[in-house]
Image (cartoon, rainbow, N blue to C red; front, side, top):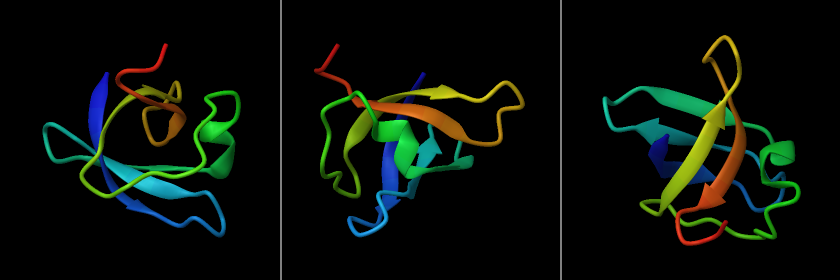
Length: 66
């Protein structure tokens, strides 16, 4: 699923994304592990995988990365 970065804290590596329907999903620093990402910008489009309960993004990737 795709989303837009709403906020990102480079010190902790955690942040939040907005789904296209306006729903905010937080993500922990571990969501970036293995993606090669070190920095995200607010407004950047990303691909996410949500947790089973849909309350958090467990994986975040820039759309152009696979």
